[in-house]
Length: 389
Ligand SMILES: [Zn+2]
Ligand SMILES: [Zn+2]
Image (cartoon, rainbow, N blue to C red):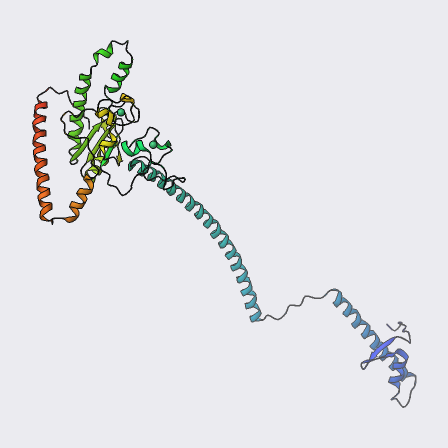
């Protein structure tokens, strides 16, 4: 170290200021009264040591700045708590994220299931609705009001009078009827088809000898059996006021059975019980109809025996009533009369009493006549009943 040569101009710090090497020696020697060689040497050594210390310190400083030492700081409890809190918060956040994702997927799955269930319910509802509409199908087109329907839409005369129309729902005219009217009439389309069809076909084929085998008389006997079968069954539901069977050859009228009850409830009971049942091996159906004016429904020319269209007529041509039980007349006021009578309840004026008693008397005499005529006809041999339940 003694060999180290120091430039006299090098700067050395002393008391917060910098001095040149030789200046610092002079500064140190100033307070001395006597300056000999030894004193000078001591001062030089002192300054040199100072310089070396400072150099050493500088080196250390450099190392420190280049490689900063990781100092273990003193452990602070509050800080540790804070770190723990942050860690917990981070974990909670991640869990929350996962839970939300799970919830979202579950929700989507649930929504899908719900949608499927709703669709299924909707389909079932539609099916049940269509079934119901089939069941309670009143006269075709009764409550179905097409979009183009207007109040002054021309009514279909055939439908208005007979309750059927050969164009059915494709008819350009209105098949709408008064929805407030009482429905006491049922139509059984093509219920009576025995022999009539075969007879008509054979009759057209003039060369066939078989046609001769089927005479009008046979058909009448067959019809009487049908009449006995069906009317007795219908009477179990309530009082019958009309029973007509079409002999028309037109497909929409052929074998149609028209039935009118006195009471709307009886009509409903018959409708519900007979729809879809089997008669003579064939399933039968019926629907409500507004027709009550039988004078209008039945072909007036047919009643006078001079209809040119014969069985191709679009108005009713009917079989003769074997017991003259039901008359072809306007029965549209029957239900209304019943309603007004029932609205009075047990109370009635004297005039009405007289009227009702007269009516009852008339009915009784009518019944007696019927019974007599029936007993006469019963004596004739009947064919076996084909009614199946
Ligand atoms: Zn029509
Ligand atoms: Zn006619």
